[in-house]
Each structure stands twice: as C-alpha cells, then as structure tokens.
Image 1 (cartoon, rainbow, N blue to C red):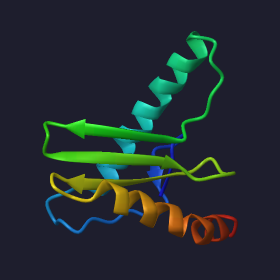
Image 2 (tube, rainbow, N blue to C red; image 1 turned 90 degrees about the vertical axis):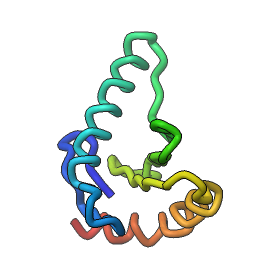
Image 3 (cartoon, rainbow, N blue to C red; image 1 turned 180 degrees about the horizontal axis):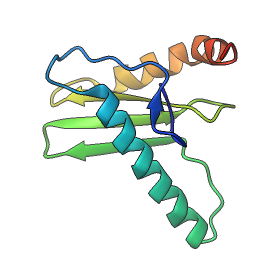
Image 4 (cartoon, rainbow, N blue to C red; image 1 turned 30 degrees about the vertical axis):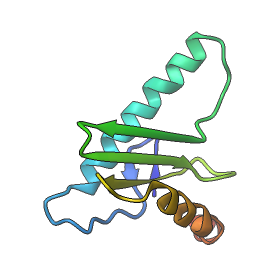
Amino acid sequence: VFDPTTGLGVVTMAGDPDFDSETMTAYISEYLKEVGKTFTNLKMPSRVVEYLVTANEEFTILIRGITGTKYFQSCVVKKGGNLGLTKEILRKNETSLIQELKKL
C-alpha cells in the first residue's frame, strides 16, 4: 500500500528477499504520475482504477487504486501465477485497508 504523490509505502513487503518492494513502490508512483499527466494532456479526467504491467514475460505488476482514498495497492505476480486470484484477494481486503488508512 502506497501514497502515489510521495512514492512512500505505508506498508511494503516481499516474499522474495531479492525483491526490493520499497524501490518498486517509488517507481510505480512515478509511473502513475506520468500516466496522470497523459490523461490531463488528453483532456481525459480520470483516476486510475487498475493497471497490469507485464515485464519480460517474467512477472506482472498489478496496481489498484483503493476506493475513496489517494492510496494504491500493488502486487507482483511471477510468471505462471494466478492473476485472477490475486485481484480477488486485493479486492477482498480493500475494505479493511480503507478502515486502517483512515486511522493515519
């Protein structure tokens, strides 16, 4: 879970010790800022709901906006992982995330 305006993670974690989730969060934030500029320049007012970014066919990054907040959640899924299940888990936990983010 991260704030895309600052690039700082509220919560970051990785199951792989070689994966730097904090650096990934910072880069995803920059990516979202650029996409936002694109929407603005095309006069398409919009808020990112969800992105899938596939890199080198090795992994996919799922990025979802958290409803009613400025925050996003992201998850990296390795090749062969179940994206449908990942999306459902993120959706399922969104309500509890929103409640916790309101405490910040």
